[in-house]
Amino acid sequence: MVCAALALSAVVSVAAWNVRINHAGRILGPVIPVTAPTLFNTATADDIMSAVQLFPVTNSWNEDVSALPVLSYSDAMIAVTIANLSASRRYLDPEHDMNFILVDTTQPLTDMLMVDYPDESDQVNQNTGIGSYPFPTTMLPLEGWPRNSPTYTVQVARTKCSGDCHSIIFQSDTNTFWESWQTNCKSSFHYSPLLAWHVCVILYPIRLI
Image 1: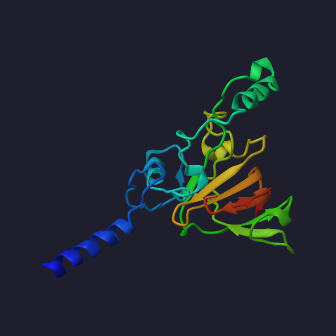
Image 2 (image 1 turned 135 degrees about the horizontal axis):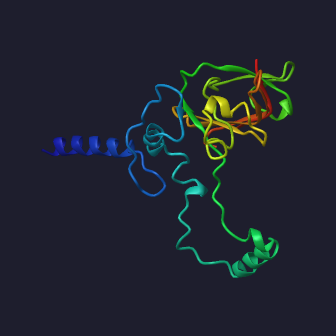
Image 3 (image 1 turned 90 degrees about the vertical axis):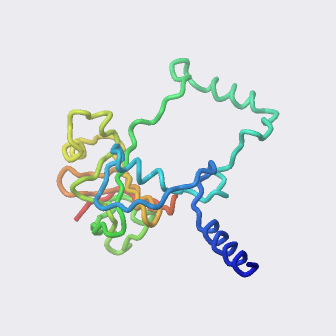
């Protein structure tokens, strides 16, 4: 009986050790594989992301600060921040422009030419300015879609981006984000710094070759 109890205890301990818990204490479900490039605004993407632990539980971004004391100069800091804003800008505005697409390690790599800042981009051959990244070339959403161009498909909208044109890819099975800036899809792809970060690395102006 003692041996059986010890064995059961060991099994439970190992199982508990492997439990995935998010920063709020919620037990995460099993990792859902990405079987094809998946846009952020889909039910499938919601399911995939709900099982992702973006940062370790002990990461500072996941710290519960609700019970911490307020800084003695908190009110002064807020007052200065408000005073530095024009009256028309004193409100909270959610960021609707950024989007992303989900891939996994089976996503073919795409050669990209860093038009600007190749020395500040990750995994770039500094002699050629070219790097290879898991960007789905036919389904890559750019900053502003669909909010700023609701009548366009993602394929059409990406040829009309005129702002910073960020693009973000999340590789779910490696927990890695890839981000580019000044992404140009109008003819050949090109980008500026391309960075990647293991939840949390980056990319920059680039061109798909």
